[in-house]
Image (cartoon, rainbow, N blue to C red; front, side, top):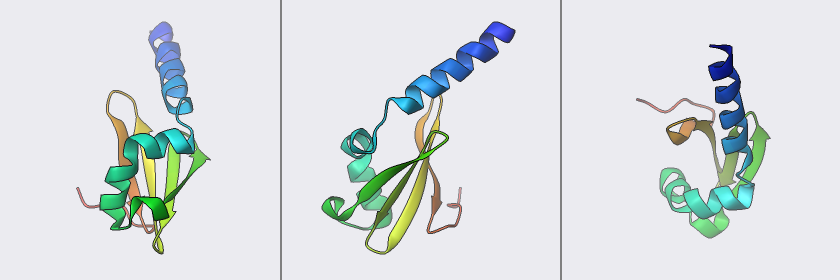
Length: 84
């Protein structure tokens, strides 16, 4: 059991640590552009730690959280949690 916990932590840290803000925008730029209703070239991503990326542009902001076995998930837009 302890092995699985250590393995899960290592995979999570490794997977989320692989993404620089530029790599995040390369893979998620079209999606963030759509979700923020903002042209891709006006968006800026920043690593905010804990497996999360912040994206700002067009007076909007969003947080994307890395979820193992799922990928990047929209965690909040302009400070509010999106409806599910």
